[in-house]
Image 1: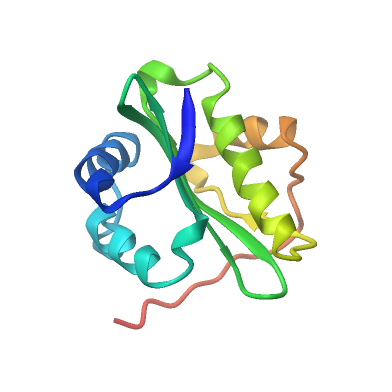
Image 2: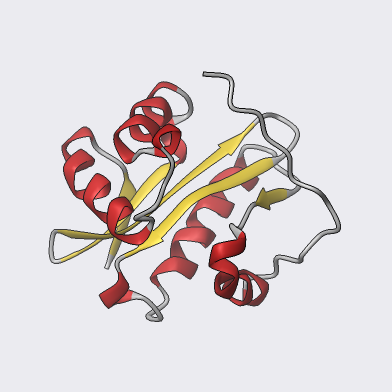
Length: 137
């Protein structure tokens, strides 16, 4: 297993993986769009995991100088529960901490509530917050 920075040649594999793991993403979260946007802003916070040259996991993170965020943590279903997701999260955490990040946030969709226990085991807590968003385009 190898975790490495995303490369442009990974686009099709990462898109296919995200479509498999998140099949009902809204159009503003389509893999091709978010990959393009991530490559324009902090591409150094975009990682993939490969096994035998096959991409089986990915994570995108961000840092605004105040808080870090984890986005799009995806592991191929046949490779889940093998520690790949945990290693991807830890890799993103290391890079965020090296950038000066003191707190990392993430959001979990209500429809994906079973993943909450995964994050709890990694030290994340459910905070009493209301997440709000506004689609502007």
